[in-house]
View: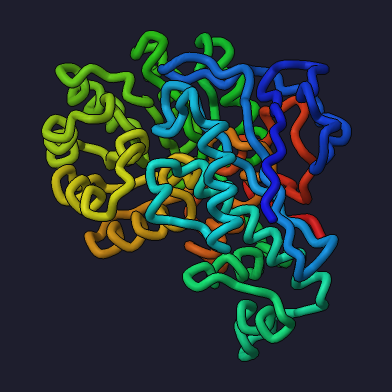
Length: 398
């Protein structure tokens, strides 16, 4: 049975505010972590709150065992951020109850719902293994086979979700390298945040750019390169579509002088010919992000990658089709020699935890390329999960 529990997760900087109906069911929110010190600013604007829907997944086969998933959209960005979202979510939950599986092809237009359901199933299977004392071992049967042997139903095509948490990262044996994120702000705010990340030990820093004066942003980058070489600190920048097409190439050339690893989404999405030209002529690698949103059909993904030919793509499960959809992106990108990494999209720790485990499965073991998984610290009342940042790595605490 699938029961949709609606919570409101209060995102950055709503101090002392808890979700309005946080006592209506699981999961409980517990004590809030320390408030964050700055807003989640991008060239699109500033996020101060985050609304999420949490799904609980139970089964008559295992009374008392529960999985939890998060469905969260970003206003003006997610392709499924629609007024009828809650009604659609309830309908999809009823559909899953009737079918006994996630109807992937029927909900491609709802990536955040897809990811929430996948997370609920994966956490349910993980809880079931603990309840049944199933311990996956190298050379032994797969987790899905062991669950089936214990009488737990595993829908066809969803076997991978039984193993999402089975990795050296999931066992707390190794961490995932992550980037330090400097959100948009005034020059002084961004400089302070930058110095904070470097002092914390991050060897990869991503700066949100495209909203304040470009030459001031260049000055921030120059300050880093005056002290740190590219071998010491990897620099990524994210314009969130903030550059104008007619100015983008000159701005890319200016950035390239400072050994930038990559720039995310320099111009607004849906300009394939202009983006393709930038990717052909760019002096530094370009990573597509927003460009992938709403491209949910495999043939469209192929067309986008073949037309634009980016150097990288950035995958956000709740925006880009869940685990199922992101697996398609990874496969198609690898076939074309296009690199990728995974980031969160301001999910609470429920979603962030699943995304981190997914990154460990895709790129692990021993994930070297920094992933974008540090956003959980932004929330003033996040949901407790066994995640901990040590230096520039994210760990599961056992």
